[in-house]
Length: 92
Image 1: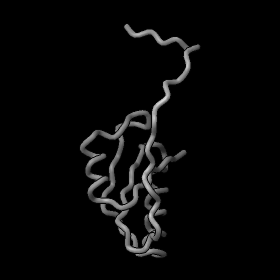
Image 2 (image 1 turned 180 degrees about the horizontal axis):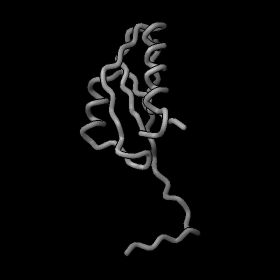
Image 3 (image 1 turned 90 degrees about the horizontal axis):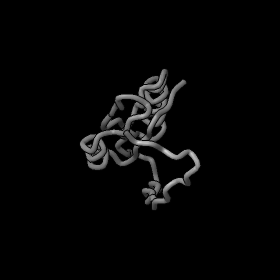
């Protein structure tokens, strides 16, 4: 059994953010649906607008098992190699 002390402080860790692209024109888009209600709808509408305005196309769509789960390493690696920009959607 694991016990968690709610008075403890969060563990600090370094996060390295990816650089933002200079332009959006023609980029391959990766989408991550977090399975919340309307997440897929929001992502589809966003992808359609980005396609119309910037010529972006959806290269890969991943779906999480639930909002609280992470993507598995295989899905993360696929996004790294097949997409230039990744958007993770939320719903509700």
